[in-house]
Image 1 (tube, rainbow, N blue to C red):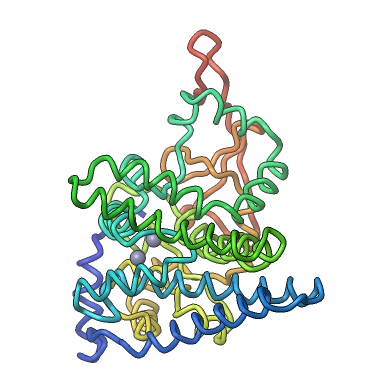
Image 2: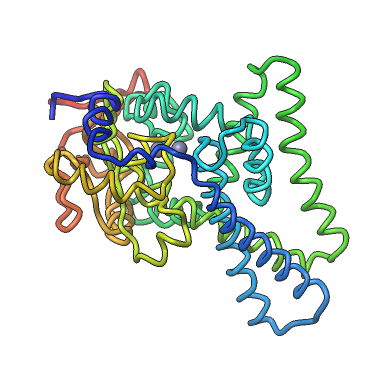
Length: 363
Ligand SMILES: [Zn+2]
Ligand SMILES: [Zn+2]
């Protein structure tokens, strides 16, 4: 598809079909946050005060991890200003919601709101976009990862979803903190150090074994849940020259009760069109997108999207294809020949240039 459109082109057309209240903040979502917070504190107390059976501890870890992830989704909403409008209040509530993931609001707004949303799937400017063959070919160590067989790479990349959010968040922190002015710099440091101080204090109070079930295992579970969404948001879509949310984003579908628990985080295309709108109204936006641009809109089951991620390499070639340099195969991306139900590849000749140590494609 060559006729890309900017987000505003779509949103101005969809907006006319939506009720006025869809643009109001929805503070009632905070009740959900309070419920998750209560569950987390009650589970901490249960693990800390009683010597529970291993199975009960693991079960509580899953409950805490799921609550951590849901609080992260709520924090994302809060920091887009869709829950409360007052900036100081949204920053405070956002900090609380992101406490378990230890991502401060200052960093998050710079990384997510001001960079990912503005430059989605731009290979140079989007900090969340996956690399191109051209870029990787110049990075010796990263390149060697792509020499492993695809199922091995897929296994490790899925296993790494249990740490990817925390690791990427730490990377973003050190990348952005140096560019902030001195006042914001100290605030950003405080916003990352305070949560970690809490978690280490908890370790000191509980001892390692209980802390493992109360915090460490839940953190890995929360990472996996948020990354299951984040990895399917854009990674099957092409890199694009224009920030076109219908071309560069994917909405996944999950059971209704999961959407309730996760504040409709599955509606990612809708979110990129209207980041300042509460997710409560995304089903209305979806309805319009499916009527107005059924051929451009991408939607698939979460399980299907994860399976497609497993089966395709994470390396872009000429922006709209995914390439496996080990097997010399290219796969389509969404809107460019990728059919998640029947994933096919084509042969391509990619050879290492001996003298320059780079990959190049031979046509
Ligand atoms: Zn996104
Ligand atoms: Zn967002």
